[in-house]
Image (cartoon, rainbow over all chains, first blue to last red; front, side, top):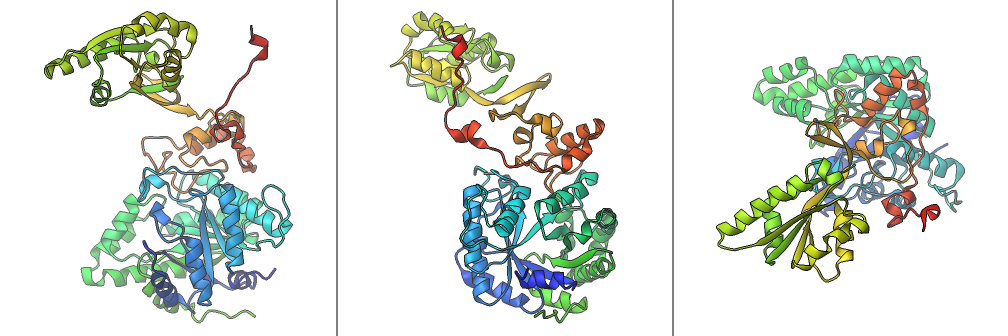
Length: 307
Length: 222
């Protein structure tokens, strides 16, 4: 299988680095191009979010296409919130035809949190179904209905996991379920609670799951104490230990951002030592310009070139 | 049962204000049980409306009647004499009842006084909660007896999303996470390992996606 650069790097056993960019609230493609070009050369692939936090933005598929046209490698995020199985499959075929090779299957943030709280959601299928659909399309050359496809979209299939959500004991079972459905790589929710993350990774490792799937740990640099408090209390699925919030609070206002980067680097360093972990996924929220600095300071630059 | 909530008085008043002789028609089954449209609610609403119109110097003639069920023609016919004396009917039944009354009396405006909310249960005194989507193909046995279609905000069939926290749903911290309940019940029954099984996508044809549904019982046709 030779699908994408991200797949090649992970298959070669290299520690992968991915980062995330969010499309604009508007039709200006320059915004996404500019953000992505900042990340060029310092990451292996760039995630493009799909109407994240349920706020209407330029579509992931079109933003990914802009990246492909620049010679960059996107990971197209795809949520099951907004499209039924007809539209999802159709967009997968279209995305492949446009040169998109990595996909991240998500259920998506609930629409009541976003810019269209009165919208109907779809949830015809869930993220595990989407994984299975991609796997069958790629490996058996069929769509969900069993119809043969003339050209099968051969995507490198990703999904998310959140070790910080409850019920904790089911989180590894859910990971196993996604592996069974056909997932190739996992990007986790951002890690601040190292103890809990290590516990989850240990369970995954002991069950042999880290041999079956490439796990990339999510990291987010904190910009300020305010952001730390906001993420800890208002963003669902994220836990930030008090010690980290205190560090951000005790940093001087002008140097808080530096402290945030420092914490992020410490987290990356600790993650690199975890058995079975295969890479990191940097989610620098509206702070993409800091990604090269983080990758370089973490000793993860230059990125490997795999033939 | 079908759970409904009476519409706000202001909305009802606006909707009925073009008329002069109003019949408030209650329903004695589901909406009575959830205190939205039974005999007592008809009486209270009638008094409130009379008073509200009186304050504006208007007389609204209001008749009250409650029948057993507005979803069966046999009972609706009992209301015919009262309907004949009114120029509009305010039905306090569920959406099904409102339409059934409307179809019995062509030419009479029938207005809804209740918002039909969901299929649910009386969880505790004064609290009704949704438990069923009416999908037409029950599979709760695969989820330890808890329906993820009606009780998970994302209708997830293969496990909880990343927003389940301390047993509650991210969409409403007052609502239990359906998947936490499923997992707790499976654990108690010693069947947690069954929750590893892949549950395939739902066939929505038996649900609303297939268009208006019918149940035809040939054996009961007279």
